[in-house]
Image 1 (cartoon, rainbow, N blue to C red):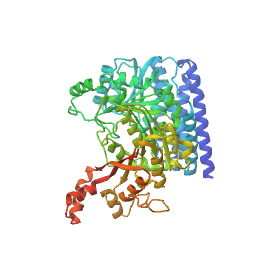
Image 2: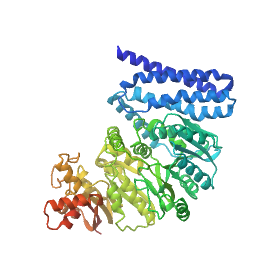
Image 3: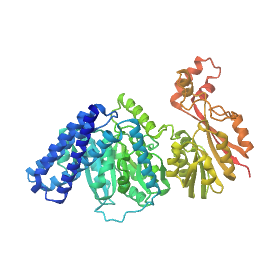
Image 4: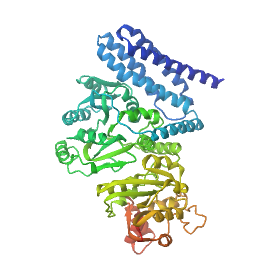
Length: 618
C-alpha cells in the first residue's frame, strides 16, 4: 500500500512539472504582465511539488539537494511577481528567464534522477548504462564549430556565496582585464547574506541570478553548466569563482585556445593555488594584488606550445563550449552534489565524449583558495570517491597515474617531426597525455596515440582520448605499424598479464624506440602501513599470471630485466621518486627497526617506486 502511495505521489509530482512547463512555455510567448495569474499559479505549484518531494525524502537513499532547490523555486517565481507589481516588467522578464525557468527545468531533471532513475542500485546502474551508450554515440559524431550569431564573445558567470569584498575584487578584475572581447556579466548569488545580496542588486549589469537558500558549490555549478546555454548570449561560457582575480590578456588567450579546435570543450588557466598540477610558483605575497598583476603582465603571453591536454581539470575559472554542455545534459551527475568528485565525474564524461580538456599554461590568474577546510570535508571526499567507484567501477584517484606524470619531467626526451605513441593500460590516460604534451613542447610536430587496456572499465577512456583504443587481446585489430614510444600507464604490478603487456610493447617498437615503465616500491611506508593495519591494497599482492614467473605485485628488478632483455630491450636510465611527506615516519620506522644505515633505509621507505626507460635494440 505504501509503495502504491509513493508511486502515485511521484506520478502527481511529474504531472505538476508538466503543467509548470506548459505555463512557462506560454509565458515565454506572451506578455507576462497580462498573464500574471500564471505566476501565482506557478508559485502554488512549486510549493506543492516541494511538499510532495519532502514526503518522499525518507525513500531517497542518495544524498541530494532537492530540499534546497524546492525552497528556492517558489521564492524565485514570487520575486518575478513582486517585480511586476512594482512595474519593473523588464527586470521581471530577466529574472523569469535567468533565475526561475532554469531552476524549474533543472529541478525536474534532478527529481527524475532521484525519484525514478536512482531508486535502487539496479535502477541507478541501468541509468548509467543508458548514459554511457548516449555518450559513446556523441563520441562518434564529428566535432564542429557552431555557425550561429552571438551577441557577445563571452558570457561571464560569477558564482559567489557571501564575501562581498572578495566578490567585488573579482568583478573589478573582470572589468579591468576583459579588454579584447565583448562580454555580458551574469552574477549567481548562491544564498548570500542580505548585505552582499543588496550590494549585488545595486550593480549596473542586467542578469543577476539570486537564490535565497544556498545549494552548495557543486549543485550550483551543475545548475550553471546544465542550464546556462538556455540564457547566455555569448559564444563561450566563462565560469568564474568569486575567489579568482582575472589578469591582463586572460580573455584573449582563452579565446584563442577555444577557437583553435572545435574538439576543445574546456580551457582553464593556471593559478597560484590549486591541486591537480594546475598551480605554478609565484614571486609575490598572497595578498599583494599589485605584485600579482605585475607578474601576470609578464607571464600572460599566448603560446600554443604551452597548451596541455589533460584528462581532468578543476574549474576555478573555466571557458566552456555551450554546445558541449547541451550535449552533457545530466551527465553532470546529480549524485555528486557535495563538492567532491563532481569535477572528476564530468571530466570523465567529457573525455569519453571525445572532447579535449586543455590547461593553458600561458595564462595565469590569482586564486585565493578555500578559506576554511573543516574535518567534515574529508568525509565528503571519501563519499565522493566511493560514489565514483560505484558508478565507474574504478578508483577515481588511483586511475590518474600522477606519480608517472611527475617522473616524466626527470627524463630527457628529444623527438622532432611526427611521433607515434603506444599506450598500454593507460587507465584515465593522464600520464600518456603528459608524455604527449612534453613531446609537443620539445618540438614534436604531430603526436598521435593508440592505446590498449586490459580492463574494460577503462576502454571508454582510451577510445575517447586517443586516435585508436581497444582491449589488449584485440591488439591486432587496433594497432597498425610500429611506434616511436611505448608507455605503460599503470605501475607494472596492476597488469593482469604482465608478460603480454611487455611483449606487446617491445614487439611494436621501432629500432631505437623507447619504453617507459614504473614499478611500485613494496617496502614504502604506504604499503607497510597497509600491511600492518591488515588492509593491503585492493588489487592484492599477487599478479594474475598463471606462470607466476612475474608473480609479485611489486615486480622484481631481475625478473623484469630478464623479460625485457629477451624481447630485445636494453635499460637506458632509471630514477626513484620520493614522497617527502613520508619522511618523518620513514625516519622513525628505520630507527625503530635498528637499521644501521638509517639514511639509506629512510630513502627506501619514502620511495614511491622505480621509473625506467628501456630502448629497443637496433
